Image (cartoon, rainbow, N blue to C red):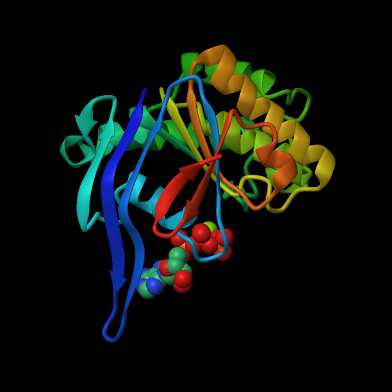
Length: 221
Ligand SMILES: Nc1ncnc2c1ncn2[C@@H]1O[C@H](COP(=O)(O)OP(=O)(O)OP(=O)(O)O)[C@@H](O)[C@H]1O
Ligand SMILES: [Mg+2]
């Protein structure tokens, strides 16, 4: 699914000063692509993710997802079937095991999860290279393993776009490379659109395209 950002502008407006983040920013993201957004701290990477998930509303311009205006997509569809999200600190339920974390997400997005979903969860955990951990609470897993669970959880819907804000921010180099390779394979082998934000050059070197946020716009490297 394609994401098209056209002439985007956004600023935070508090009680006092305003903080401009985007002005006339345009970029397109194609399915099958693994993108790394880079830019100084405060440049607007996380803000862009919040605009894509509609936690924030653009001041001007347009965001199209699969040729539909983001504003017109029902929230439930956006969350359950279009976007999958991954976070720096994984945001798993610590006392549940990997399968339970996946099933809980599925129940919330799609309703009761049964045998088919259990099988899907097992397959996805195998897909991200996690087997043999299914009975342990996720808090006992390493950071890299927890991030794999989080990636599998993001795939429990029918997401075609994965949004990952600093997915390797808490990981060491080996795990960073493994997560980068996994995200690249989801883009290339399963035609997903993977958009990440990162400060890590090593991670970004696995992306197909590096997009810098600067001067309130996007610059493709
Ligand atoms: N609710 C808010 N009100 C006012 N300013 C905000 C608000 N949220 C974020 N900002 C400011 O907007 C700027 C952009 O923040 P954002 O979190 O998008 O940056 P970032 O590129 O993700 O940075 P980092 O690399 O540190 O994660 C920052 O200067 C931040 O302080
Ligand atoms: Mg950020």
